Length: 67
Image: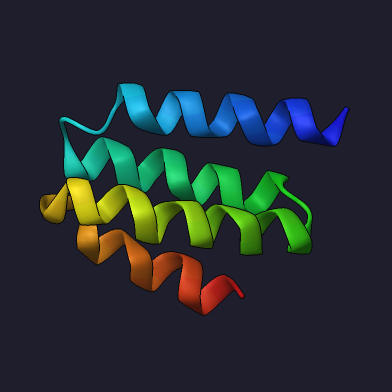
């Protein structure tokens, strides 16, 4: 079950990646809902994802603070 939430979170973040504010809002919600090891996986995914979408790099700070 938790893996489904993680996968859903990634799909939501991909869909809202056009807007940094919306992306940050969804990321904050995800950090609250995910387990600590899932937040770490999300951080790793986010590093990869922000390499392709540099406008989203400020969001890395949120995940770094949560980890």
